[in-house]
Image 1 (tube, helix red, strand yellow):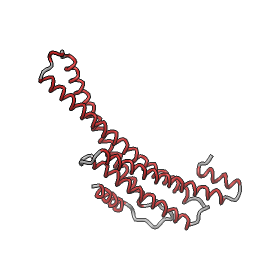
Image 2 (cartoon, rainbow, N blue to C red):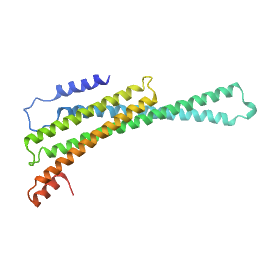
Image 3 (cartoon, one colour):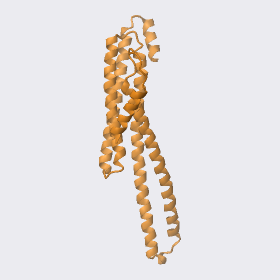
Image 4 (cartoon, one colour):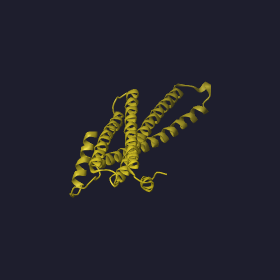
Length: 227
């Protein structure tokens, strides 16, 4: 399922992309794929969380009604009917706990997807600056492009993991296995994000080192928003 979605996004991007002459240091094609699929994931998670929250409210109200009935009964009135009510109360409680657990998983998955969005934002911000920095040669810009492409391609694997987790709620996957996948995906996106930030910092430092005068150093700092 997730492979088909990503393939469709790629096809749509290629169809809708206008034909234009080659540009120096243009945005990476994979960027639009990552952004589109990540946005789709966050929207899907939001919809699922909303449905589960509505179900939680219903279960809480039903559970409260059963509790009210049981609280009015006297000890000597306990019968088969009250036992059924207790069993019903138990089922509401178990279902409510299950729903809340799934919401917790979804919230964690959404955090991973948001970190993916932050990665893309950091890439776009840095890339738009580096490609307009005269301290870098064309060959160095091309090298940056390769590094960024590698990081973004790795981030696509994180999206695959997210789809795997979402699909797991319709299968018999155990909570332990699901949590393991979530932790792996979170660690991977954190690693990708840290690699991107470090690479950006290294490039900024290189630009500063190539500045020949104090005035030029100040210009570079202002250019990159360094206080």
